[in-house]
Length: 225
Image 1: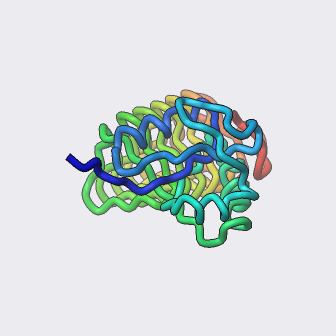
Image 2: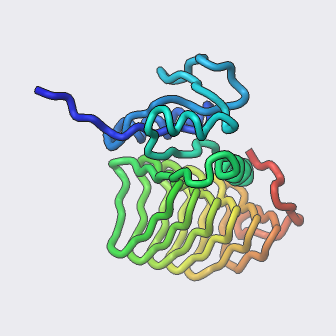
């Protein structure tokens, strides 16, 4: 029997988060991983059974030589993921970003998931939700009906969002945090682990506690991982 030929893709990064993305791609069985792109590793170095085959500056040549379908940025930090996205497009303007969704994910009716988004094991996304590009929904997180995640935002493992919740671009909902129905989280904000959000959260702010309270301001690009 002739072996099925699948499109080849690239994975950007080689960290713990990358290992989960690789696992999802393998379980989806839609694409074959050509290799990894990571400027911080030596060429031909191996990670999770795949070789590092180059840097972003070499991307256009790699895509043309190997007929690459697209790729996924497997980097957990929201701002760094955006920085890598910009670098990729500088070197290969027509590069296609792909989403990957673990087979155990529960997805409701009329859900939209943008390019470059990673959805991990045990996630629930209920009806009417919109998840924009390059987001992360981590293990066992949930997004209830009609909620919206802005681009480059992320839910950590076990984060739970009620219905009609809005998460702004680049914002982070940390492990085990809960956001009450209808609340809005501004851009570039951080909700601490185990927090309970029962009020709207503005832009560029850090909130912790049960119920959560404003702790301090936060600048775009500030590390949280």
